[in-house]
Image 1 (tube, helix red, strand yellow):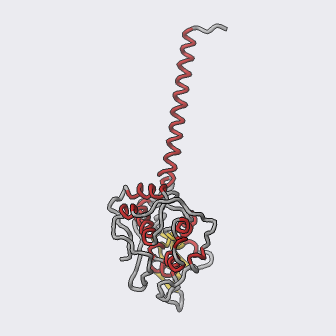
Image 2 (cartoon, rainbow, N blue to C red):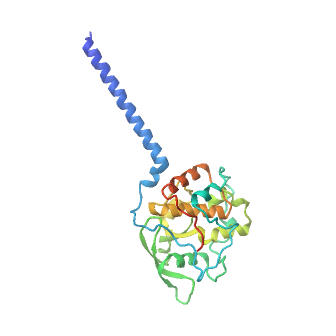
Image 3 (cartoon, one colour):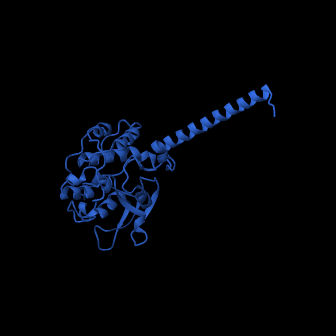
Length: 265
């Protein structure tokens, strides 16, 4: 079957248009993938912008300081980040939570265990269990990770709604310097109020042992404080960051260049 010159040119033009369209679609897909693995994965399910922008650290009225390896530098978070070593992760197959001591010890020796100290610090309208000056029975939390109000009530089926998160997860710390700390220093890291925040239970489970490169709070307004708090903890306990983690922290701090380190006040 013969083909006219006009038909041939028309077919060539349509073929070129199809290839151009295919290239545009591929470029768009690759751009979407790149966006997702940088900022996109953190923005897909962001909370409304009315959540807390910071979380409490220390209440001298009833808490006592926990001694870190070294003081948190009184500096901008960006400058403090530059003082942290950048290395790869150490092995994790030898990680054991017991390396950080028994969970929720009374490390500051104020008579109350760490979990109840943090609940008392972070909740409002706190009520104690009958006959106790430590055990928190209920309270209200203005939750920082998802930006919602949560009612806490102690009970086998309700307590998990509010969990105490290690801002720098212990599993992450183990891979980034904590193996070189003494047992007492690791115990302090696990119970230091600087490294602890009462948060939404589901968000805490989702975070797991992630660092800033793979997880950030859905409440975007809290991210500057969160990253600055991670930097402060890592500086205080001589922990390092990976390059991907440092890059992620810098991206957050770009939106708040005046953010300071977080210290007990």
